Structure formats: structure tokens, C-alpha cells
Image 1 (cartoon, helix red, strand yellow):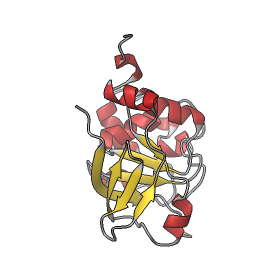
Image 2 (cartoon, rainbow, N blue to C red):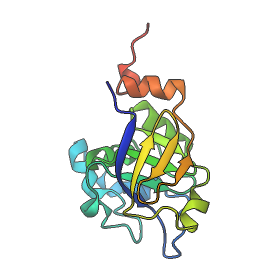
Image 3 (cartoon, one colour):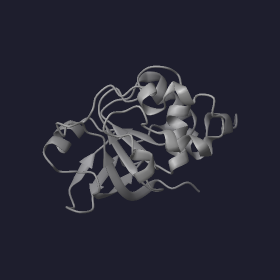
Length: 177
């Protein structure tokens, strides 16, 4: 049975102004210089290698971490490596204000949990969640709890389709019942 509740350290992907970085594209997530790498386990070390201020993310990330990103996360190409690099690092969930359409589809189809957090910009700018805080994510209830402060925030919960694909580990794992 799959887990639907995760607890972990959060990474809040902000710029120098401490605001969520919008429009992080697939080239910033996983640079095209590394597209020749086909072993998923080797992809993680290059995560955010092309994103200013975050080039050391892969060295600092730990299995079980959770990430909060800005709007239009994963815009750009249909690069599956931009999803798989987080899986290789052991990142459990990515939460964003919004996702690029292709990135969203790639993540869901590969059974990787992503959730929408429409109020993320206000929560982050208000200092209610910061990198390093321990949080709990409930995928089906659509709830994020900052375990440091006890504050709870609403996310968009898994849809039935997203839950079915997640349960099957990927779109390809779904059986035609």
C-alpha cells in the first residue's frame, strides 16, 4: 500500500528577494548538457545545476525532503529527466503554485506526487514556512502542516485519476479493469 502522508524537511525555492522563483523551466531543473544520462539514479546529482542560487541543492537534499516552488514550475520541454532527478534524490513531494502543463502530466504519469498550493506565495512571504522546517503533507486531504508552528494550509488534493496512477506506480502500471 502506498503512503499518502509524508513528513520531511521542506525546501522553499526562493530567490535573493526571499520570494518563490516563478517559471523555473526544465532546463534549469535538469540542464540539457546531461540529457545523455539514462540511469535515473545518476540524474539526481545534476538537479538545479542550472538554477542560480540553487546549484548546491543536489548535494544538500536528503531522501524524504519535500519541496515548495513558485508558479509555472517545470515549464518548457517535455524532459522526463526533470521529474526523475527529484525521484533520484529521494524528494517525496513537490508542491507549487502551479506547474507547466507537460511537467504536470509527466510527474502524474510517472506516479510522482505533486500538489498545487495556490497560497504558497503569501505563506512564504509571510514567513509561515521556511526552508528547513519540518512539514507533514496529506496527499488525499490536501493539507500541509508546518510541524514547527502547527499551522495548517490547504492544498489541492489528489484527483481520482492522480490517485489511481500513484497507486499503480505509473500510468503504465494501471490495469484496464
